[in-house]
Picture (cartoon, protein in one colour):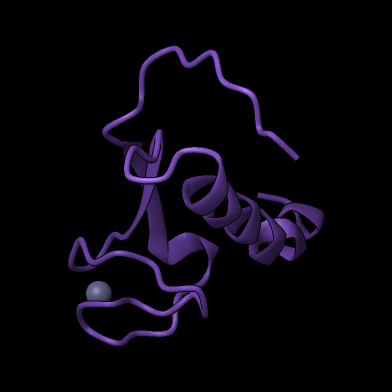
Length: 76
Ligand SMILES: [Zn+2]
């Protein structure tokens, strides 16, 4: 990942979490998890299980409950 990509990571996490909260409540299409323990990523980019501060290389994305093709309106 480039330096530009690394700098975008906080923005990407915020956008994913915004979508999970406001567009796909209860059916997040992508789950961000700590690759060290599998814990969820908090709003402050910390692991909710082990408390580690997470950077882009500490997180992996997995398919969430709504991970199929989704036709939805953001309603914003
Ligand atoms: Zn963890």
